[in-house]
Image 1 (tube, each protein chain N blue to C red):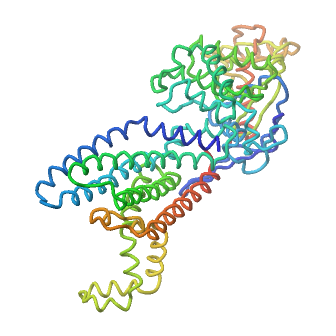
Image 2: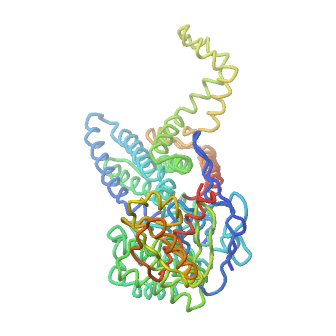
Image 3: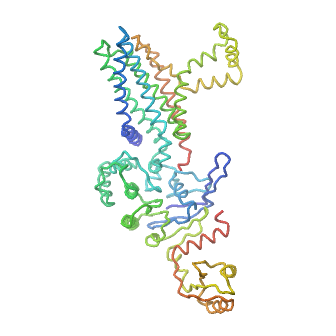
Length: 274
Length: 311
């Protein structure tokens, strides 16, 4: 445990040391300012609007951090050979991967907490409140970032920094469409009821069976389904998040992150460190 | 303490490229307090050997053991200090903090670590830069810090990849002294180098690697003693005997400027000179052969590639 905490602390400091976090916090404050200005045009809906904008910005900035840091973590360590000095110590490789992942997770937690604080500070004078849906939605943003960070770690293990960044971005976007994918492949019988144009109907029907169907099915289960942890609308509309949904989303995000990290460990454990 | 047993390493070629056989059945052992220099031309497989010794690469076949245990086991590495070639460390850390991180990962007690880090930084002339970020360090300073991190946990075995590279004369002297001090304290030092003059100053034994094969592992005395009773003869070409003809006549020689240089046994010298004169060569100079480690290394590597070792 001492080893993991030493690596996680080091990784946490490394990410903070790049000053990305500071610029992100400053940028977040700016976004909040924009939100205030924009809310002038949404009479009576200011709190809703700022909450929605704020949570969206939180996710976006977290994603920027994951892509610029998380997606290059391992590949950069290998490329710059800093990994050699670390792995020559009496540590297991899995401890190195887990330590790095936890370091990133801690930074994301700090980021989400800081941005939430900024958001609340802006919302309070405008009649907003620190509500459970808002806290739950921020937690959901953190979980979403945690999953994408595990994907980034895996991608950085498999490819160059540029490719890893691209893969992470694509998985993030696809993860937001995973629910639609499920609808697409599971509601075969209902397609006709959608009154789609003939050409689209033919394409859609092609995905109802055979290899294309299996490919989409596999993609659905492999991609992180961000809908499970997306509570932003609840926060914006001040609708409480059912406890069961929050727990299920949390469990889903943690299990997904653990599996992705475990695959990273399996790959990293076998490779030659050149 | 350290044993390489028929170690082979093949790197598979990516995307249709040929695979590379970096090590071809390397076997040797290191024992007790000694400094062993691992020398050879670029691409000989020195860094690959050291990476396998550190558990960073897995051998394709054969095995490496340290005190009977595999270096891939983390516990085995607790007694090894490692300096990679051209070390590059975390830019955002200060030298002191970096050493503290290395020590913590080696399981050191915090107060001991503080003392050891300060003393090593002082010894390596980095005390003034202890709190400076590593991104501001020069190549030589990073190299010295690399030595400090390798020594931080007082390991029994030091594995150093080009430890004298990138250092100024003072830095080289400092690192050489640290290596000999480690030997005096009963440690084994195994280091790779291109700088043979340093090996002549500090190594007890020299391992020569060429084309992935261990060509020779012998004491420094043994490698330089072989020149006793030999003479170096410089032959100049004449109208009857051109340089090309001399090369064909005595292929074991070397062209140095406009002369053909040969090493001849003292007993056969008279007969050789008579024959050379009869063939039409001018005898430019005859002197006692001074074989350096570099001469021996060149001969060994040439011999190895002629036998197919450098494929």
